[in-house]
Length: 174
Image 1: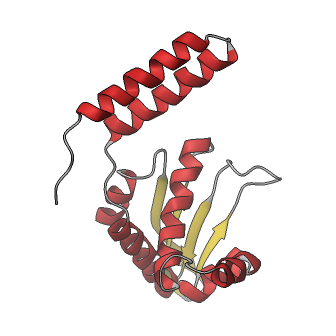
Image 2 (image 1 turned 45 degrees about the horizontal axis):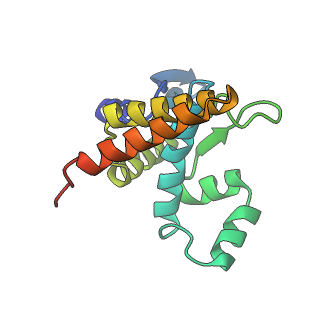
């Protein structure tokens, strides 16, 4: 599991992980927990981690309206229990969407399922190009700042410069 946790750290900003053995009445019990940091991008990354694993367990992304509605009506804890028995998801307190999320497992079977969840999501999620992501986030922040300050000409120049730079990048080939 440590290699999978390290691979997850490459994709999920601010993720924390704990793997330990707890003592129960019948002896040692393996336990594991993964937690997001409480920020917007951090919780979005973490949500993508477990959503990719759920999609894979449920046969891929929802392609029809009926599938989207069915998945939306099914509580997340039921979907998680069905796909990865013993793995529990705890969300942020209150109405916040961007607080801390925690995936945790207690017991050998649950820890094995959490390991599977990590493996599946990492396989479905290529390692990000952090430099490109930071560039996009900076671009968006600058655009919104110019918009809020009423600097339309600056905003248009930023958009033109970004588009021109994107046009000059070589296309990736497979």
